[in-house]
Image (cartoon, rainbow, N blue to C red; front, side, top):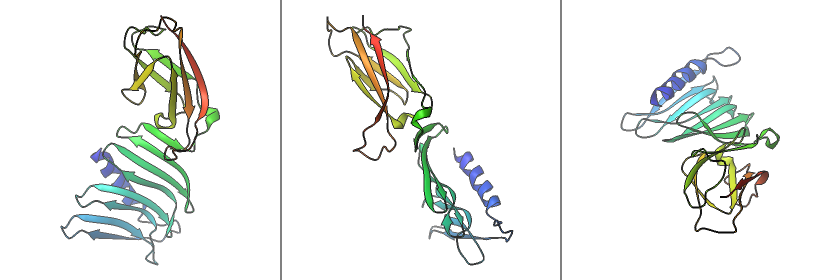
Length: 211
């Protein structure tokens, strides 16, 4: 991951040395009192941020990067965490989209998402069964093409599912029910995970037989 960030930094410095008008920018570096780099910014002739600029924490690790066009956010802004990267896309200072990627660059979250492009729910029992045995704990994967895991929520009737990973879950029953014939998993999509009042859009309802 650190090598990837170093590559991004090197590439960014190469790209932000020259403005769109062809005039070369000035690269300004600031340091913490400890001597570690605090920021590397690209400035135009008016001393305004122009190009991709980088900001570091007090330990010397890359904390975030922003891309400017004459002082206005234009393009990609990234905030780096230990296991995730938040990516924001701007057009003339206006936020267009927000995405979250894991350390392997797998998409975890995106807004906005096009609900019409979300694929059907695919459920696979790792045991090889095509039914739920309520007397046994099982593991299943639940995936939807075009729907990142953080945008997805579930409503389950007839069983209890608990996450193991972004797409892997355990499924179990709290006790045996003689009259239980099926498990229903309803899958919903949310545009904004930070909005606790948002009601997800139902995109699928899966019926699993019980034995």
